Length: 545
Image (cartoon, rainbow, N blue to C red; front, side):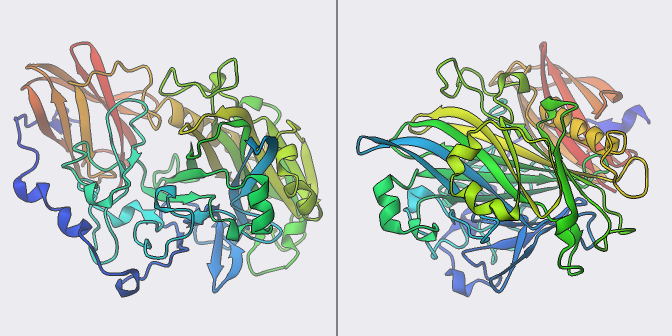
């Protein structure tokens, strides 16, 4: 590759003109009512991914991997894209905690997906807007897909269909990399957030939901109120899907969990219930009854469950492989069980990791879920369940949440073909492709800057503003800020750390802009590393062709 790959045009620039500063106002001004929108956004919104090799549905009520057709639940996770190979009928998060109410300690919990009934107890919206579902907030509480927005301004590509992207970069620190949810839609712009919208993957998916409307629970509201419900938990969910070959069979679901109550929630547990149905959609109605699930015990640090199918229900020759569901990030606690706040992020060794893994057949739904607190906190680690219509419950805990406390739990989905060829046989050797992808995904999350490089020295005056567009094809623009004139080094790396190109230039103080020529790069994920006065800043970006 020629050293001229990166052509640098250095200048002090005025980032935004008065017109640009006010551009988002026309998109975020009072809008048409939801019923007048050209693209009608239902309050309960179901949308299907279009990027990567995993075809998956998302809703804004906490339920994932299930599609809704006129109120009829249907399977909602297929791999590879374009096939009828279904792997999940539905899944959703769950939360359980001990709460002192009227002098008594109660074990309370809620579910975003009950596999026996397909009911969801959580609802779209923010607690700041009240306890109930607000049908006047359709635009604000829709399922957001990043493809619908300008990657630089955050403005909708179709201003008649939605409002601006909800996640914006607050700073360039490790904790700021994932952005913050901007509640006031009128401030979702580059004026208030000059670092720009927070869009990370080929397709970011975002929604918010809460546990506060007791009319959606499967118990009487009176009995729930007397027990101390609701817990008043606010959720922010962001999912990431990738087009490049290295990560196209991976999805990351990241949940920010916020205690919006005035109560300290003790011995809290968070997890996911997943109804894995590995079958040909629309074929044999009993295709899910010959599935196998197991905990991957050869490397417990992966926090991994593996599901595959036998082939006597029409699956043979259809290209089925392995589905891995793992806990990617979990809370870290101090010696008293309270959430740690001494660092912006924590290594896997500092986290709670997966503490509970239950496998149960459809016939045990009621007994498991009606006693969710006791089951998710059991710290039982099942090994496998062979040939059945099965469910998985993954859990992490315990942790104490003070009022306003926030923690994060992330799950990773990975799919892979059998390493030995043919049909999956469940052997360690045959699962090699899956395990390699799980390890690569974990490395990407922690070391390749999906979680920002926690070893970086953060300096408020030296900042990496943005690379845009991202993903890119032929070119990308790079913006950064330095406090004074000096040498800045530019190093382009691939995902295994090899230097593709490097150079050094003298740059002016303030905001600098340069043009990155990508024409000669092969498709994939790259890292641009800037060096200045002994400090390093990195940004990851994707090249598409």
